[in-house]
Image 1 (cartoon, rainbow, N blue to C red):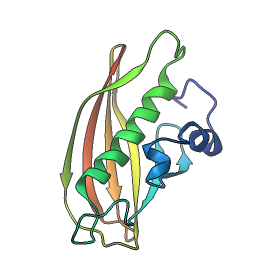
Image 2: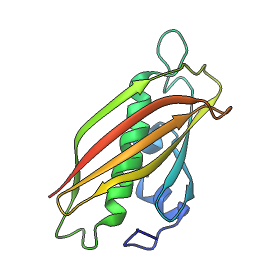
Image 3: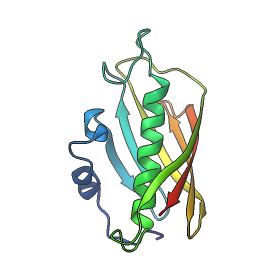
Image 4: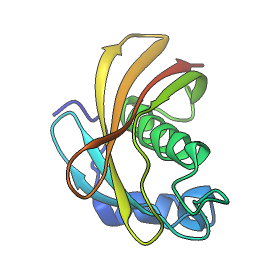
Length: 139
């Protein structure tokens, strides 16, 4: 396991209370040895006017997953903090309101001063919706 902190799904949800994560109803659903999975409903909070998933909401899910993953890799959060440096996203397929998407984060690079994450967001049929890459600076 790559995580430097004991981690639970309940702990991740508690850490996210009263943030954009809770506002968008993002729910952490699985923690693996080197990945985290979260689910986000497609609702009035996350759609664009055509009632499909807003690309910005996908980016929020991607940055949430990568930021949480980087946080779990820092041993002493009073000495270092992860901050987003760059994110990109390729939006591949739409998802209508009433469904949900599932995001999974995996490490590409875990360095002393940067972490790079790959985030894949999929629909309920396991088809790719968005692919994102996030670079975190470790300050």
